[in-house]
Image (cartoon, rainbow, N blue to C red; front, side, top):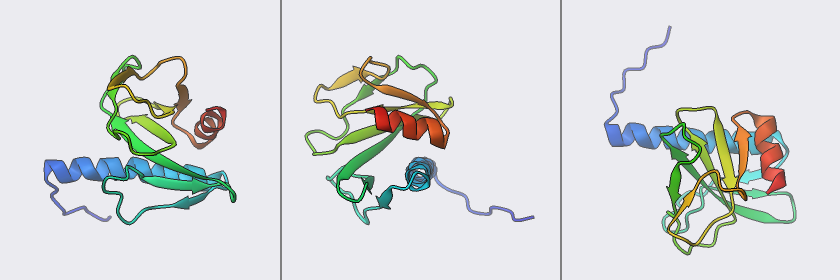
Length: 131
């Protein structure tokens, strides 16, 4: 049986977790037939994924939260960068939200205009298609 021998620092381990959710979202978009592009560098562009339906391109920021409380307050971490959607994943529960970027500093995650999804490909795509 393979054994993981790498000892990651706490910041590195947190980065690995974040990347795993970006990869998960990319696989779910691919599963649904979207073209998915991963920027080599997204410094200051705030684009974790670029997805296309063949005609339109959408810039997406992926965020995770360490909470199972859907009333969690999230912050605008993208500033005025032009992105199309923010997708939040809970690391401690089995749900997430698809959100249009907001300009205010903070916002409640389960605001009425945000679309909740169960962390599974079909509910995720259904939520994305509703936004």
